[in-house]
Image (cartoon, rainbow, N blue to C red; front, side, top):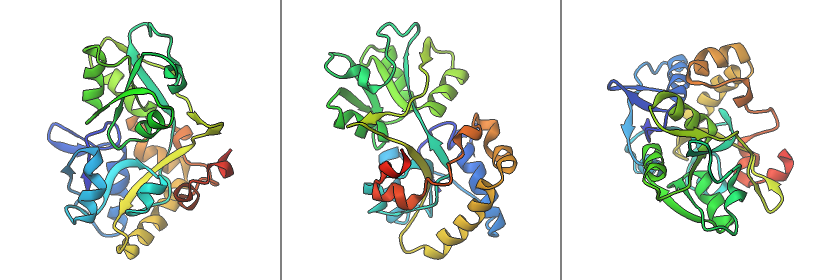
Length: 248
């Protein structure tokens, strides 16, 4: 599986591949008779190209299900529901609450290349810089190159809880673009031709999603709660079509 080192989804710790997505994969692939899940580390923006080039068999990164990505590869049904947050200097000196806080200001937001927050910044025409990974976003704040780093709340809270840094994380939010709430979810990515593997994966995933206790027993140690369980109406079909109105 390809991963980009974004905790708590998939990352290396003491040389071992771990994370919520990895734990989910080991559970599901294990049921499918695949006992050995190995990781290939790449930049986030290179995950789908690496998948289609055959460098690995699936993307293990909790990747947001977006129409442009669905045109390149096949996503599982949603595994995690997402909200965004901002990592800011301690005390939040600019009183930032969401990405609309940057509109018509000279403030700069850092976003991760290939992440959904980069799309938000472009659509809102914000002053922004792109970084390669979570640590780079933290470094951008500490160096003064950015006033905040936008990423999923789960990732930012994990960073803040597990690193000795002088920053804080805002309350999570669902970003609004043109009056539409940008509800999102992440899933595992497969090559388009691997339909049998995708179907088998989705079958086991559905059993886990339907069982909150089992779901939390797999991903709960990584900070995930029942709030991250995707609602029944949130499907890959709707997300790939970009039909967010159906989720309002």
